[in-house]
Image 1 (cartoon, helix red, strand yellow):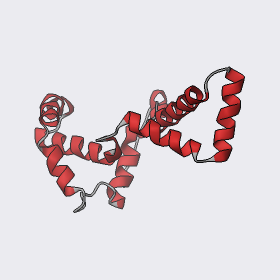
Image 2 (cartoon, helix red, strand yellow; image 1 turned 90 degrees about the vertical axis):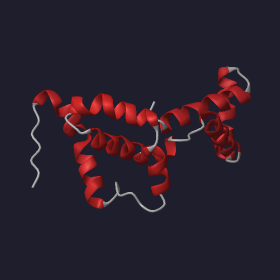
Image 3 (cartoon, one colour; image 1 turned 135 degrees about the horizontal axis):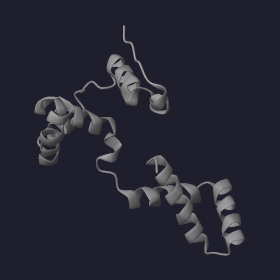
Length: 136
């Protein structure tokens, strides 16, 4: 049994991600699979992670190795961001919009309303989509 106690001040950030992390742990989402093992080993050798673990581990009450594992697992959780190419993703979204007649028609209407070039409006919308995906 887990009892999570919060004060009124902290209700807006209930659990600080603990609830989601605990759920991921018990459903096996955090397990290092064979396919993720090479990436785990690559991240284990990353000097930036080692340095960060040395700095913040003791402050948070973790050993350096515990902090390294936590930082590596956090990166693996967001694996799609490790080699993320922002411009390539914008171009991919632009292509997807162009390939969807209904969306392209909406972009054309928006470009006319804004009195700007179609490509600029298309790119602006693609950037918006990518930023939403990144949580910005």
